[in-house]
Length: 328
Image 1 (cartoon, rainbow, N blue to C red):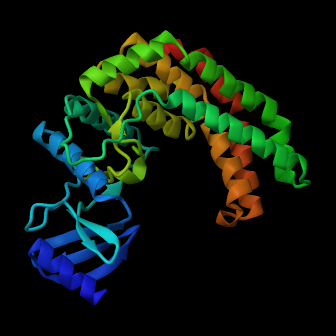
Image 2 (tube, one colour):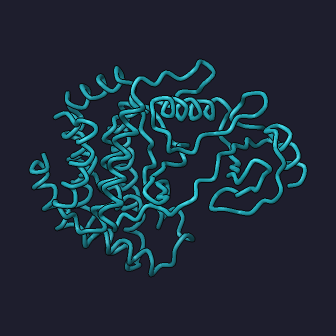
């Protein structure tokens, strides 16, 4: 790593004094303070898009982000031995606690501020633009096909997990089909058209470990998945993560949505599309896909517990979806 240290130091114009592993990156102590060093296989043009997005947000007053530092040549990365490295300032604090109502409120406000500040984003010509607008129906279709294929694998098995999955397959599959049918509508097309005109960015991984609380200040990290997308993609995923922690409590959802809407408006089309995203059995797909395709991640018992959690949510989720319109 010493050769890499030297090259990075030269390119960024500071001395690296020490380096230690930190999550999926490294904390480096430098002559310019503590930083985070990330190694990535992302192409330079993609890194440039992310850098442009962060600078656009920063320029519009959304400053609590992990901006990339630029090299002495003005690049937000340095290439060494086939990898690209990015550096950000280290943002000290704790991951957002979604079980704490006040922190959840701040996470919702922060997301609304992010979306508002992102409007009008025009990336530079040297970027590879990530545009996911219009892709939700294809995503639903692909995941449904995968769930169906996995059910065929389960029919050949005899484990408790196989039995649990197959016993609930029809319900979850029909739930997904219904979500797909609902999103294939003019309302979704209208929302795509508006989002294209507004040029709104989504973080696309807006979860607790990417929201840092430092005293009363909240910051957003890790924009590697950011893209052009309908803003309710982020909001629906934030809601879903919280709802699983509170048995899909409609009152908790109302607080999150009201806080978001106090800053950034939601149209009828936004509300409609968000409903389809919340309806889709994303967690079921995630658990069964992981079980059949990468079983080493957890023990058999852990997979059974995870699947049982999804099954236990059925009635809570059903009641929530029946009352969804009450939120607005």
